[in-house]
Image 1 (cartoon, rainbow, N blue to C red):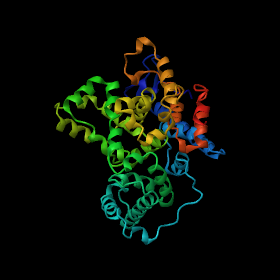
Image 2: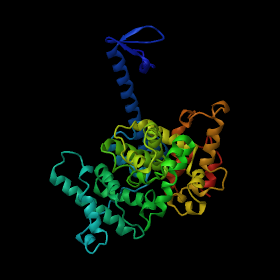
Image 3: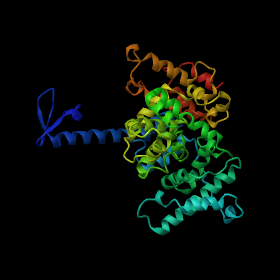
Image 4: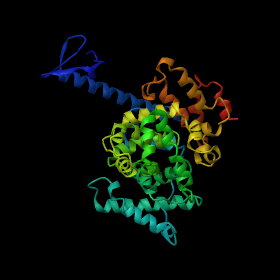
Length: 417
């Protein structure tokens, strides 16, 4: 049976669909069935690609990143158990033993962690038996305290438990401890300083991104003096605290784990841009706009927003946005400076410069005034995989770089001197 490539533009008439160009008629069931077959085929192909990438020695992390970023993410929690450690370069051969009771004795963070975990009822699946939930809450406390005990430079913050519980529910306690430990010393590092200076610095990326895409919306928010605090809980919990559907949370975690640590702030910007009409209809004052934006919709078009966030990251990479977000010396204090695209700011062949130049070259001058969301995208997933590069990934990072040599042939030696 021929697959109908244009099924989305068919219009319904009675119990049939009409193709507006060809004038032919097809039963609705045929169209829906064909679409389902296509969706099932893409899912099976993605599962095959993920298993092939995992079976390689070393694993093909570049492909795993692309799978995590692309539509649908990593599909199942079983796959996430296998792929998330690869994205974070975590060795799962030696899982940590269960902690003893001494972990909680005279622990300066225990009381606050206990309070936050007790308030985390909504983060557990509805209908979970009380005993099972209580056991998971005890594990959640221990994971947090273990990570803090291993890394004395880290400081607990309210909202951290929202991230940890996501890993606990997906991969289980022992593996969650390893993953959260790595995440806390990399992606979340700036949130775990003694002060909020670096967290506020990261929030400062939000308005410049919005300004580049939609100056009218930016100016309205500036006049309202709304600031960026409405997005704080989004950022420091990776949206885990504000989204009620766990499926959406883990889909975003797939995306964020496969990308640069600043991707959550790009996603936050895209949410605000998506709500442009609502914002502009508000009273132009801080209270009204803050109230609207702090109430995040639960029915967001997540795949569309993920795609748009990726496009914005490619066009306006962090190393360029840092000049707008704050002074360069402040930017260098953040954990994102450990990422090579940020660290090689003076090097013309750093990946974000290559991407930006290529992206600009692909846009025809007569289309330059259009929204960045409508501009052509070329090898976006490959580009995002490279932009997720970290020093800590070692050999895995090298695989990511090699996947992009077709457009940055001289970059490999500059990353690994």
